[in-house]
Image (cartoon, rainbow, N blue to C red; front, side, top):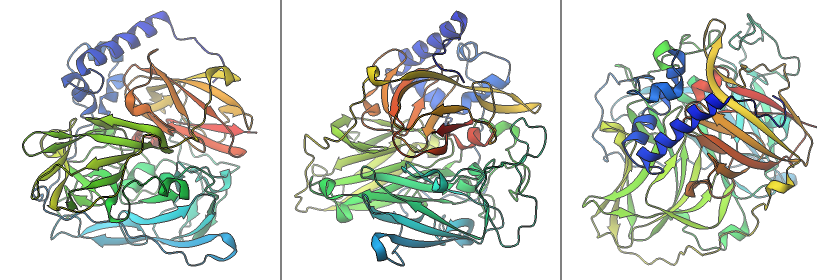
Length: 558
């Protein structure tokens, strides 16, 4: 991974541009049949690279049916009948010394996700999603995690500006009390056998994670990050929300209290006995990573959950609501739209992105969101008649996966909230001329260990290898090149999107991000400053199956 790299051949550039132009013509940006056919399988088109076709060549024909959607084997409820649950807010066990201290036990339980059916889950503190942590900007938090699950775990606070020791590096395992197997990796990433990470910090049963939270107020989320097994662990329930707040944001007058709703969207599928269906090669998630061949491009379910409920409904006032939206799906992309039963659409007024408030609001009619992205959106129900219904639909879905959730307007009510024209003045003003170097990275399918994998610059993840070294305080421009859909996430830092395909960023790229959704054949440029902490961090694709199958790299900040 060298600096100032431009080694892609003219042929590759032409192929990539042809795919991008074809996607753009069909979609009109984020609309249309072509876009839906590419994204509607949640990025599952990626297996074209496993067939021996080039991406452009495959797209010139009918896209193959890859990453087949898992079908539930249990009767599913009709949409918009289950009430929307709100994750409980966790209370600190101590606030002494200016630090809020929390305790979370990771444990197995069962819950009624589908009405009348019990589903076994792996959880944080017995709930799915896990309990929400609410913090103040600049006030440190320490979370003591206790692992009572049957496998090792790792916790990553996604979007957190966190020291390396608490960032949730995939080999910094917390072992179960009765885990007696060797502490080694599983040979998934081209090592030809088990491997060890000499820098790994392994504990048994308990680990403290400390988060300084010296960052802009925003919605973060925490999830398991164990090497090779992130995808099935999240699928089984190991995900929760973490909100950071400050006085300046609260003074804006945005909707708050019960009119601020966290919405964690995720797809799942169920077996006949109500268990979660997932095509893992090792159903116990102990030694053999990976998924069955048809799902190597990403696992998709046929049930859309919001806060752990299938296609829920929420009763609202005829007023503004602030929706804190997270796509916690493994691989499914969404293009969200708010539609009344008479076909009219409501504006989605975006006020924030992954890393906090925008400079000013951006109005969307529909909003694409890739795995791990977050959007802070205001939805105004004032003109919806009492008794009226607003459905949130996924323009990329079909059949049951087109519906997400619904709101039903129950009453007229006073509303003193507002959406100011100026939301934030503290966004970084990095310019291209500030960058001390430019790097390029390719995110492509490939072969490893005689099987299929997902690679960065042609190499699978290796925890013992340093892929990129930068200095604390350096500003860099990264050019990211994709074969198929890849939501690329950087740990520890936020970034701004400079361009897509040589053109200006899209409207939903506004603000400070930590995850960018690369489209097929696309090259995008981002700019960031590594001004957080020294140590070993990661960047990777957040299609969780891609991540587990090698699409991750090390970043060393010195």
